[in-house]
Amino acid sequence: MTRIIALVNQKGGVGKSTTAVNLGAALAILGSRVLVIDDDPQGNTTTGFGVEKSTIGPSTYDLLMHQASTDDAIHPTEIDGLHLVPATINLAGAEIELVSELSRETRLREAVLAVASRYEYVLVDSPPSLGLLTINALVAATEAMIPVQAEFYALEGLSQLTGVVHRVREALNPSLHVSGVLVTMYDGRTRLATEVLDELARYFPQQMFKTQIPRNVRLSEAPSFGKPVMLFDPKSRGAQAYMALAHEVAAQHDRQPFASAPAGAALPS
Ligand SMILES: Nc1ncnc2c1ncn2[C@@H]1O[C@H](COP(=O)(O)OP(=O)(O)OP(=O)(O)O)[C@@H](O)[C@H]1O
Ligand SMILES: [Mg+2]
Image (cartoon, rainbow, N blue to C red; front, side, top):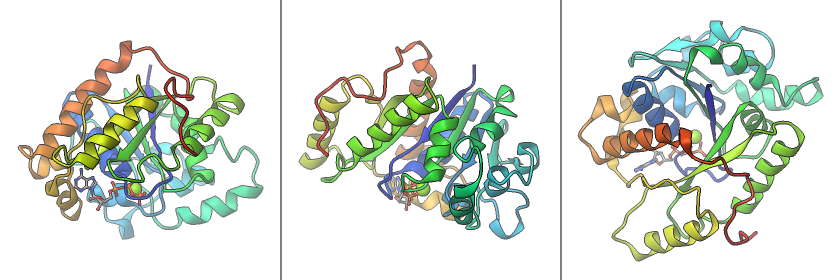
Protein backbone atom coordinates (compact mmCIF):
# COMPACT_ATOMS: atom_id res chain seq x y z
CA MET A 1 0.00 0.00 0.00
CA THR A 2 1.17 3.50 -0.81
CA ARG A 3 2.13 5.58 2.18
CA ILE A 4 0.98 9.15 1.73
CA ILE A 5 2.84 11.36 4.19
CA ALA A 6 1.75 14.95 4.84
CA LEU A 7 4.50 17.18 6.26
CA VAL A 8 2.62 19.55 8.51
CA ASN A 9 3.34 22.25 11.06
CA GLN A 10 1.66 25.65 10.96
CA LYS A 11 4.83 27.11 12.42
CA GLY A 12 7.02 28.48 9.64
CA GLY A 13 10.62 27.53 8.98
CA VAL A 14 10.69 24.24 10.88
CA GLY A 15 12.04 22.14 7.99
CA LYS A 16 8.89 20.90 6.21
CA SER A 17 10.16 21.69 2.71
CA THR A 18 13.73 20.62 3.48
CA THR A 19 12.30 17.30 4.63
CA ALA A 20 10.01 16.94 1.61
CA VAL A 21 12.98 17.38 -0.73
CA ASN A 22 15.59 15.37 1.12
CA LEU A 23 13.49 12.59 2.61
CA GLY A 24 11.92 12.19 -0.84
CA ALA A 25 15.35 12.01 -2.43
CA ALA A 26 16.65 9.60 0.21
CA LEU A 27 13.71 7.21 -0.16
CA ALA A 28 14.18 7.21 -3.94
CA ILE A 29 17.91 6.59 -3.60
CA LEU A 30 17.04 3.57 -1.43
CA GLY A 31 15.04 2.27 -4.39
CA SER A 32 11.46 3.38 -3.78
CA ARG A 33 9.27 5.18 -6.28
CA VAL A 34 8.41 8.53 -4.72
CA LEU A 35 6.10 11.38 -5.66
CA VAL A 36 6.61 14.71 -3.90
CA ILE A 37 3.72 17.16 -4.09
CA ASP A 38 4.39 20.81 -3.39
CA ASP A 39 1.21 22.07 -1.70
CA ASP A 40 2.66 25.43 -0.63
CA PRO A 41 2.38 28.63 -2.71
CA GLN A 42 5.92 29.55 -1.58
CA GLY A 43 7.10 26.72 -3.84
CA ASN A 44 10.23 26.04 -1.79
CA THR A 45 10.11 22.33 -2.52
CA THR A 46 9.80 23.10 -6.22
CA THR A 47 12.86 25.36 -6.04
CA GLY A 48 14.66 22.72 -4.00
CA PHE A 49 14.41 20.33 -6.93
CA GLY A 50 15.70 22.92 -9.35
CA VAL A 51 12.42 23.22 -11.24
CA GLU A 52 12.25 26.66 -12.81
CA LYS A 53 8.91 28.14 -11.78
CA SER A 54 8.48 30.40 -14.80
CA THR A 55 8.50 27.42 -17.17
CA ILE A 56 6.30 24.92 -15.40
CA GLY A 57 2.99 23.93 -16.90
CA PRO A 58 0.22 22.41 -14.80
CA SER A 59 0.92 22.48 -11.07
CA THR A 60 -0.80 21.72 -7.78
CA TYR A 61 -3.14 24.67 -8.36
CA ASP A 62 -4.50 23.04 -11.52
CA LEU A 63 -5.07 19.75 -9.71
CA LEU A 64 -7.06 21.43 -6.96
CA MET A 65 -9.10 23.45 -9.44
CA HIS A 66 -9.80 20.43 -11.67
CA GLN A 67 -7.93 22.09 -14.53
CA ALA A 68 -5.37 19.37 -15.20
CA SER A 69 -4.84 15.69 -14.59
CA THR A 70 -2.23 14.59 -12.09
CA ASP A 71 -0.26 12.97 -14.89
CA ASP A 72 0.01 16.30 -16.67
CA ALA A 73 1.43 17.96 -13.54
CA ILE A 74 4.10 15.36 -12.75
CA HIS A 75 7.70 16.40 -13.47
CA PRO A 76 10.71 14.09 -13.45
CA THR A 77 13.67 15.10 -11.27
CA GLU A 78 17.39 14.44 -11.41
CA ILE A 79 16.88 11.36 -9.23
CA ASP A 80 15.51 8.18 -10.79
CA GLY A 81 12.13 7.18 -9.46
CA LEU A 82 11.51 10.58 -7.87
CA HIS A 83 8.78 12.76 -9.35
CA LEU A 84 7.45 16.18 -8.42
CA VAL A 85 4.16 18.02 -8.72
CA PRO A 86 5.37 21.64 -8.50
CA ALA A 87 3.71 24.72 -7.05
CA THR A 88 3.87 28.38 -7.84
CA ILE A 89 2.46 31.46 -6.16
CA ASN A 90 -0.85 30.99 -8.00
CA LEU A 91 -1.60 28.23 -5.49
CA ALA A 92 -2.35 31.01 -3.00
CA GLY A 93 -5.44 31.74 -5.07
CA ALA A 94 -6.73 28.19 -4.68
CA GLU A 95 -7.20 28.71 -0.97
CA ILE A 96 -9.72 31.46 -1.75
CA GLU A 97 -11.22 30.06 -4.94
CA LEU A 98 -11.92 26.68 -3.37
CA VAL A 99 -13.97 28.09 -0.52
CA SER A 100 -17.18 28.08 -2.54
CA GLU A 101 -16.47 24.79 -4.34
CA LEU A 102 -17.92 21.38 -3.61
CA SER A 103 -15.54 18.76 -2.25
CA ARG A 104 -13.03 21.47 -1.48
CA GLU A 105 -11.29 19.42 1.23
CA THR A 106 -10.88 16.30 -0.89
CA ARG A 107 -9.47 17.76 -4.11
CA LEU A 108 -5.89 16.77 -3.38
CA ARG A 109 -6.92 13.29 -2.28
CA GLU A 110 -8.68 12.73 -5.62
CA ALA A 111 -5.56 13.89 -7.46
CA VAL A 112 -3.22 11.71 -5.42
CA LEU A 113 -5.38 8.60 -5.64
CA ALA A 114 -5.31 8.86 -9.43
CA VAL A 115 -1.58 8.01 -9.45
CA ALA A 116 -0.84 6.58 -6.00
CA SER A 117 -0.60 2.97 -7.15
CA ARG A 118 2.56 3.84 -9.09
CA TYR A 119 4.45 4.98 -6.00
CA GLU A 120 5.51 3.53 -2.68
CA TYR A 121 5.58 6.98 -1.10
CA VAL A 122 3.81 10.24 -1.73
CA LEU A 123 5.16 13.16 0.33
CA VAL A 124 3.06 16.31 0.54
CA ASP A 125 4.71 19.55 1.64
CA SER A 126 2.29 22.03 3.17
CA PRO A 127 2.31 25.76 4.00
CA PRO A 128 2.80 27.28 7.46
CA SER A 129 -0.92 27.59 8.21
CA LEU A 130 -3.87 25.39 9.06
CA GLY A 131 -5.92 26.58 6.09
CA LEU A 132 -7.51 24.69 3.24
CA LEU A 133 -4.20 23.68 1.63
CA THR A 134 -3.02 21.96 4.80
CA ILE A 135 -6.45 20.39 5.30
CA ASN A 136 -6.24 19.02 1.74
CA ALA A 137 -2.81 17.55 2.57
CA LEU A 138 -4.18 15.88 5.72
CA VAL A 139 -7.26 14.54 3.95
CA ALA A 140 -5.08 13.06 1.19
CA ALA A 141 -2.61 11.52 3.64
CA THR A 142 -2.41 8.17 5.34
CA GLU A 143 -0.10 9.70 7.94
CA ALA A 144 1.10 13.06 9.19
CA MET A 145 4.75 13.76 9.90
CA ILE A 146 5.47 16.79 12.08
CA PRO A 147 8.88 18.43 11.75
CA VAL A 148 9.71 20.42 14.87
CA GLN A 149 12.62 22.77 15.27
CA ALA A 150 14.56 22.22 18.48
CA GLU A 151 14.03 25.72 19.89
CA PHE A 152 12.29 27.37 22.78
CA TYR A 153 8.88 27.75 21.13
CA ALA A 154 8.90 24.27 19.61
CA LEU A 155 5.85 23.01 21.46
CA GLU A 156 3.77 26.08 20.94
CA GLY A 157 0.96 25.35 18.51
CA LEU A 158 1.43 21.60 18.59
CA SER A 159 -1.77 20.98 20.53
CA GLN A 160 -3.68 23.03 17.95
CA LEU A 161 -2.03 21.00 15.19
CA THR A 162 -2.77 17.61 16.75
CA GLY A 163 -6.31 18.87 17.33
CA VAL A 164 -6.72 19.57 13.61
CA VAL A 165 -5.29 16.14 12.75
CA HIS A 166 -7.82 14.64 15.14
CA ARG A 167 -10.74 16.53 13.59
CA VAL A 168 -9.73 15.60 10.04
CA ARG A 169 -9.48 12.00 11.18
CA GLU A 170 -12.97 12.09 12.71
CA ALA A 171 -14.68 13.90 9.86
CA LEU A 172 -12.91 12.97 6.64
CA ASN A 173 -10.03 10.53 6.94
CA PRO A 174 -10.40 7.75 9.53
CA SER A 175 -7.02 6.21 8.77
CA LEU A 176 -5.02 9.39 9.43
CA HIS A 177 -2.50 9.23 12.25
CA VAL A 178 0.63 11.05 13.37
CA SER A 179 3.34 8.65 12.35
CA GLY A 180 6.29 10.69 13.45
CA VAL A 181 7.64 13.81 15.07
CA LEU A 182 10.95 14.83 13.54
CA VAL A 183 13.37 17.09 15.37
CA THR A 184 15.16 19.36 12.90
CA MET A 185 18.03 21.85 13.11
CA TYR A 186 19.18 19.98 16.18
CA ASP A 187 22.35 20.95 17.98
CA GLY A 188 23.01 18.40 20.71
CA ARG A 189 25.71 20.60 22.21
CA THR A 190 23.20 23.12 23.49
CA ARG A 191 21.26 22.42 26.64
CA LEU A 192 18.15 24.04 25.22
CA ALA A 193 18.05 21.64 22.29
CA THR A 194 18.38 18.58 24.51
CA GLU A 195 15.72 19.95 26.86
CA VAL A 196 13.33 20.49 23.96
CA LEU A 197 13.99 16.95 22.80
CA ASP A 198 13.22 15.57 26.27
CA GLU A 199 10.06 17.60 26.49
CA LEU A 200 8.84 16.50 23.06
CA ALA A 201 9.49 12.90 24.04
CA ARG A 202 7.20 13.34 27.04
CA TYR A 203 4.33 14.46 24.80
CA PHE A 204 5.02 12.05 21.95
CA PRO A 205 6.57 9.04 23.67
CA GLN A 206 5.96 6.70 20.77
CA GLN A 207 6.07 8.98 17.76
CA MET A 208 9.51 10.56 18.02
CA PHE A 209 11.92 9.58 15.27
CA LYS A 210 15.20 8.30 16.65
CA THR A 211 16.91 10.19 13.86
CA GLN A 212 17.33 13.92 14.46
CA ILE A 213 18.27 16.24 11.65
CA PRO A 214 21.28 18.30 12.74
CA ARG A 215 21.68 21.94 11.90
CA ASN A 216 23.88 21.69 8.82
CA VAL A 217 24.74 24.50 6.46
CA ARG A 218 24.85 22.17 3.43
CA LEU A 219 21.11 21.58 3.89
CA SER A 220 20.44 25.30 3.61
CA GLU A 221 22.81 25.76 0.67
CA ALA A 222 21.54 22.88 -1.47
CA PRO A 223 18.24 24.56 -2.55
CA SER A 224 20.08 27.44 -4.17
CA PHE A 225 21.71 24.83 -6.42
CA GLY A 226 18.33 23.19 -7.02
CA LYS A 227 19.54 19.89 -5.66
CA PRO A 228 18.67 17.56 -2.82
CA VAL A 229 21.59 17.47 -0.40
CA MET A 230 22.49 13.90 -1.41
CA LEU A 231 23.46 15.18 -4.85
CA PHE A 232 24.97 18.40 -3.58
CA ASP A 233 27.14 16.97 -0.79
CA PRO A 234 26.43 13.29 -0.08
CA LYS A 235 29.02 13.13 2.70
CA SER A 236 27.55 16.01 4.68
CA ARG A 237 25.93 15.36 8.04
CA GLY A 238 22.66 16.62 6.62
CA ALA A 239 22.70 14.09 3.79
CA GLN A 240 23.58 11.29 6.16
CA ALA A 241 20.82 12.27 8.58
CA TYR A 242 18.16 12.25 5.86
CA MET A 243 19.42 8.86 4.64
CA ALA A 244 19.10 7.56 8.21
CA LEU A 245 15.60 9.03 8.44
CA ALA A 246 14.63 7.29 5.20
CA HIS A 247 15.76 3.95 6.65
CA GLU A 248 13.75 4.64 9.78
CA VAL A 249 10.64 5.64 7.80
CA ALA A 250 10.92 2.52 5.65
CA ALA A 251 11.17 0.36 8.78
CA GLN A 252 8.05 2.01 10.22
CA HIS A 253 5.81 -0.28 8.19
CA ASP A 254 5.70 -2.67 11.09
CA ARG A 255 5.11 0.00 13.64
CA GLN A 256 1.81 0.26 15.39
CA PRO A 257 -0.10 3.26 14.06
CA PHE A 258 -1.10 5.75 16.68
CA ALA A 259 -4.10 7.99 16.84
CA SER A 260 -3.44 11.68 16.57
CA ALA A 261 -3.99 12.26 20.26
CA PRO A 262 -0.58 11.74 21.80
CA ALA A 263 -0.38 9.04 24.42
CA GLY A 264 1.93 11.20 26.53
CA ALA A 265 1.22 14.23 28.67
CA ALA A 266 -1.32 16.83 27.60
CA LEU A 267 0.25 19.39 25.30
CA PRO A 268 0.35 22.99 26.43
CA SER A 269 -2.02 25.08 24.35
N1 LIG B 1 18.75 20.97 9.33
C1 LIG B 1 18.94 22.20 8.84
N2 LIG B 1 20.12 22.83 8.99
C2 LIG B 1 20.31 24.09 8.55
N3 LIG B 1 19.36 24.79 7.90
C3 LIG B 1 18.16 24.21 7.71
C4 LIG B 1 17.89 22.89 8.16
N4 LIG B 1 16.61 22.59 7.84
C5 LIG B 1 16.10 23.66 7.22
N5 LIG B 1 17.03 24.65 7.13
C6 LIG B 1 16.85 25.99 6.57
O1 LIG B 1 15.90 26.64 7.39
C7 LIG B 1 14.98 27.38 6.60
C8 LIG B 1 13.57 26.86 6.83
O2 LIG B 1 13.49 25.51 6.38
P1 LIG B 1 12.28 25.02 5.49
O3 LIG B 1 12.04 25.95 4.36
O4 LIG B 1 12.50 23.59 5.17
O5 LIG B 1 11.10 25.15 6.54
P2 LIG B 1 9.54 25.09 6.28
O6 LIG B 1 8.92 24.52 7.52
O7 LIG B 1 9.24 24.44 5.00
O8 LIG B 1 9.20 26.65 6.17
P3 LIG B 1 7.78 27.28 5.71
O9 LIG B 1 6.88 27.06 6.87
O10 LIG B 1 8.07 28.73 5.45
O11 LIG B 1 7.33 26.55 4.50
C9 LIG B 1 15.45 27.24 5.17
O12 LIG B 1 16.26 28.32 4.86
C10 LIG B 1 16.25 25.94 5.18
O13 LIG B 1 17.25 25.93 4.19
MG1 LIG C 1 8.13 25.13 3.39
